[in-house]
Image (tube, rainbow, N blue to C red):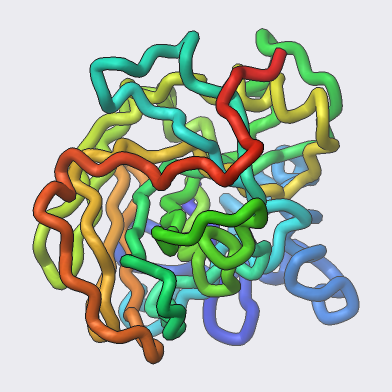
Length: 305
């Protein structure tokens, strides 16, 4: 099932390829709960609500997808995390040498057709969009064993980790955590529709030109490993969004005026506009062989047990 938010904070399900059915009525007191808590209630109680949702979908024609304004499928999760160096995209990388580590992204997720704002920061050499598969947590989790970790996944969503490169500092707020640096959408696909999240094609485009084109099979630390590791140190909550990392081959810079798109096999496609005051940054010639920025002083990538 493809679950989305649209228009004036309505809950919907995609019916077929191009119809949106309003299922808002399945959650009571939505105005009092607010957008995020409403989505959390839906996620927490989805198994109990699914039959009612399906009856609504079966009996309604729905509205054309093109006629609605899609919102971020999770409006403001308690946590949005991004995996750090999690793809076997260079010959010298292996599961043993890459860290199972994460950084915080801004929880104000940016829905489809929203504006990614590039600010004029002279030290920034370029801004790159990293296409990623993200998963949405379905229930509270702490110290989750790896063999039960997939029980804590609610569904999957396309995600961009927007990264401002060239800044060497201990904080990742400006390089990674700006409030439009988490484009997410178009919807959440429940995990029952994705038998193997580690075999999905991921593509991104800038102004219609293909940039990234990879498969999640090259992910180093798989989702169960990520959940088990994270839940040692954090409490995972329903609605948390966790991006699983990117394959660096094909990355190329963004500039003001670009249109950015992502598509993940079996999930969906979405796009965003790039605005702001950042002056044009010339693309690097070696973008296909791009490596992440050097680590800030004092930080290493030794895996944490």
